[in-house]
Length: 367
Image (cartoon, rainbow, N blue to C red; front, side):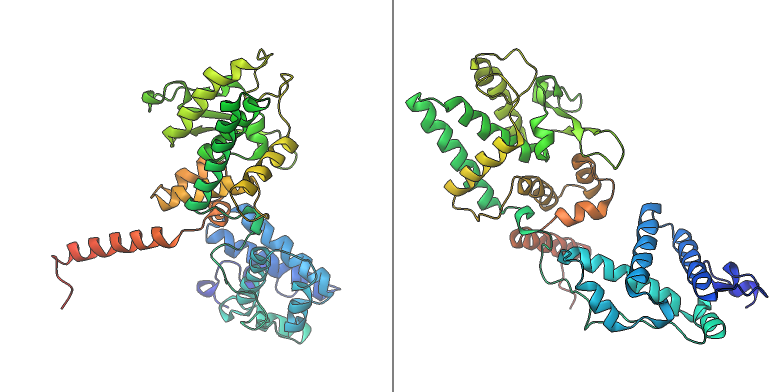
């Protein structure tokens, strides 16, 4: 293979001419992975994505006990059924395997010919339309974490508010907790928070945003206990307020309701009757209660509110990168799994696109 024909990741750039290792199979496999790594880096793919794909291919090789030039469609099917993975996860795994084999079988990289010369067999693409998962639904994650429709969200908040108002009008015990919980769930949705991020909020975590002074002291929510990377401390992020009604709800709670707790001297936003910070279990229990009152499916969880925040911002035209930064995702692909665009939003986007297209054509329909 001439120098001009050496693509990034090709066999000629990885293997040493004239050297035959004692065990050609593992050496050839490692060389293929090294070449694929180089090819992906040349495409400017992210390092975590490249490394994750490499680990996955090694897992599949360990599962099969065979080398890429001996892999079969049946092995893909056995492996796919072995893990109990979610639909979206198995699609990702199968996709990575298929991409690796596309690379290994591409004649431009020389691996098929190299394998035939060294081990007497060629790799083939063993992932096909009959043994790989397809995109069958708008939302492929776990049902308990799907975004709520706007109607479902309104029904949930109405149930929470009705409960708080009924308790307050009767002045019976528990009205403070009912008001607190209704506001907490509005906060989870209004800033796209995880459960623990919301529970760990302190009063001073709400601050002024110079870019939105009209929001007063609730223009930014400082998240101090974001989801940590493995082996790292909790990650911090500043979430800009994009829903003024949520800011007003929190302000009303902090100024008018929270001080009525017997011991509100601590910094926690969400207090129990004894002045302690509420627990995650309490949040789950009250969510289940409001969910039942709203007549929503029993498999929905608190995390649905965070997914709803992402989906509704995207539907309303927010920049995806801004949404990604708001919810603290390192990768856009993670934010994408949170997103489901409703039919009404798709129709609005379609009409907007058509209007722009017709305007560009001078108002004609192209005939």
